[in-house]
Length: 232
Image 1 (spheres, rainbow, N blue to C red):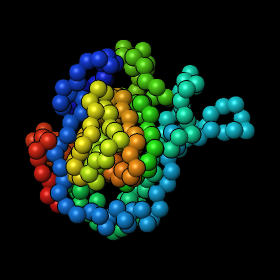
Image 2: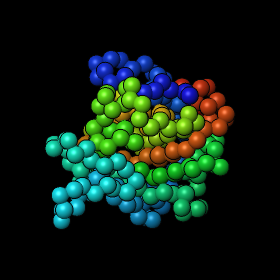
Image 3: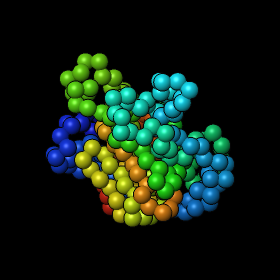
Image 4: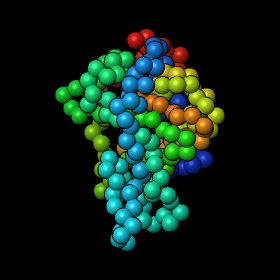
């Protein structure tokens, strides 16, 4: 296990670099054609939770958690981001494929490879992926029923264009902004609350790679820092 888990749920505590999330530097290359190709395939809306207006109950959205029914102020119909699983279209995004190859993930286990396109005003609310809605301390800390992921699980987020004012990433108490294209972040997503919001006037493209680490992946993470360049 690379990162601590679970998170402490103290919103005023300072999270140290690498404690729960880590920037492993920047990928260097030209993937502009891949962005255009991914968008040409057609990205799909990913709402946080789809509301069935014909019934009182919420309907769980595909690929994500159910809206917390105790949170009347949430916006379950809001689109989180638009995506395609680019690995389902072999050869369409060759530079993206090279980035994934560099991560040296375990291809014998499930490996999710998404082009994550967050449009202006798309929001992914504060959440833990395997919890419904707003995560609270009592639902995670000292909860024997909380479901932890396997220890080799990891997620990478690679930002594909320079930051625009209004774009926000938050992992625990670490907030990321002012990134340059290619910045790569990794974290153990299933126990760490996180959110993304695009309050800018431009689309915010990224790669979201989720799967199991190999020894080579662990070495890459441990030996990299914010100054590391991964030339592809």
